[in-house]
Image 1 (cartoon, rainbow, N blue to C red):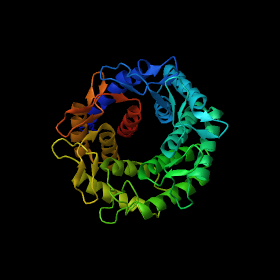
Image 2 (cartoon, rainbow, N blue to C red):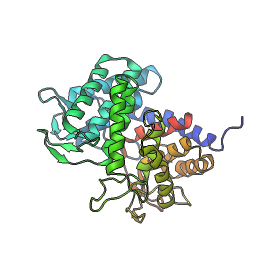
Image 3 (cartoon, rainbow, N blue to C red):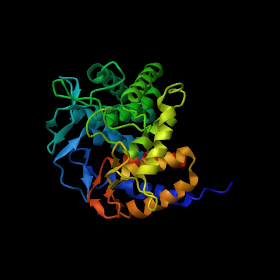
Length: 362
């Protein structure tokens, strides 16, 4: 069988990830004094001085290294896993901190759904590889905490609670999407019936409160919220999540709508000459933020791969490699004209690279 037209580019991207990105965050990207990943590196690969360390950033790095082959990567994953409860879990409140300061002391005690979702995802991924029972316990306990404190009982969740557990932000699409990702991973290692029931409730809640009937896109905030927006990258990300578990979502409205929303997002939010995905559109498709973030490009590539759009994928990967990847790492945000808009490389981005490249391998 003849390999697809994008196979050589994909092989280059895999090599770049394996030989540049993975060693980078085991080396210069890891603060050995703290036992935590640095928050960011500059374009040469040197650490940007840390003013904080976030639980979410450590969890995303754990997600990556739990899946990298080799003893060195697995030892690194074990270090990252050990750091999560040591720095970020408050046993007195049975709560996870959002961040600690440069000395490892509690900095922001906000209970953040986005962070909790990544803790569940990272622990599920690490348990699947290591069979470390501590990871399974943290995964299940954090899922229970999410349902008890963040859940509203209607498939939607508060985005953030105060340190004392009072809601401070209502439902938002992005943390609920990552909770979906986390529960899909968790269902693969424990209590599948419970997690599937939760996933179906979430899908119904998203369809009811966030799915725009005109565009079939999932808005960032509940419909009717002032100054709402649509992020094309999140349409592609939802497609990948729903595509991964068709039996979970059988008979629901969301999996039927999202492919149509992706077509709208491609028409309105992807530049035809560069295949660059813009950051945000208004609810009618007008340009709201023309900057291009690397995560949205990786989600577009993953969507094209899963949807079998091979010709479009060949063009997109070639443009992505030219515009976003370089010998020392990557460009995090560029303008529509290709100008660098953000100089650092965050520790959270390898998570997006790995997810997209895994779809290409598959």
